[in-house]
Image (cartoon, rainbow, N blue to C red; front, side, top):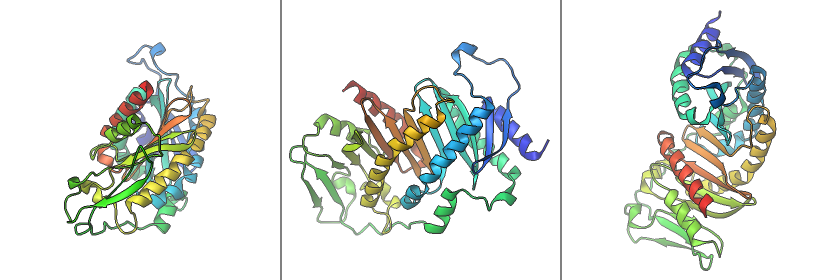
Length: 334
């Protein structure tokens, strides 16, 4: 048994999943399976486990789909895509995790165990990396290659002496305006929120989106109906988030890019639904794309409505998850 196979089996055991597929780009180099044993829960309470071949195909399809998103994430300058979590209503989730440049893992898990699985896998990957055949590194994923060759780490711009601006849209008129203070102070002296919505947007929707935001959770959220944004809100102008912006990445550039993602992600979700249908029973209702600097969320609602949300802080994703879950529940009651 080779070192890589041994480390993968150790990771499989520590993560508590039935199958684990290891990829070099779109090629499954190894699929390991647990030794049949009794589960802590009755079998009829567990989601149906995917077959090794089904899991292998799912990871390959995810690779193709995520590669197409590479240029969009590269332009955001938020770092490489670390992991993707795909959730469906029937208590199942698929985890696609980066190990090293061009190498990934894929496994399925019950939805309520995703957070615990991510923690265990993150810890186990540190032991797995030395066993990865780095001689294959020229076969890098397009995502990592694109970000290495076409982006540079943006240095935070000097904002201490700049007068903060807040742009809002009137619910009554739909017109926007810009206000500023007469001195350079903490942006909390004025509202850190930027809300954009067309005339006639219910005030309740604007309030729900604004309430979902927080420095330690979600920093941007947009509500869509039939592919058209009905309301967006963010706190990009809060002083605590200033390190995420500079001359090459401004709040407005992020808004524009996230708006484009909001138009692309429904199509991505439909492709995932088609590709992963045999593995995950039920239509996808949430996709989480974790990057070096936070995460992008796509959350299906009802009747063609959906949310796109963003957290810029990778250390606060658990809080962001809770805020998005609460917002989706509140919108379902509207």
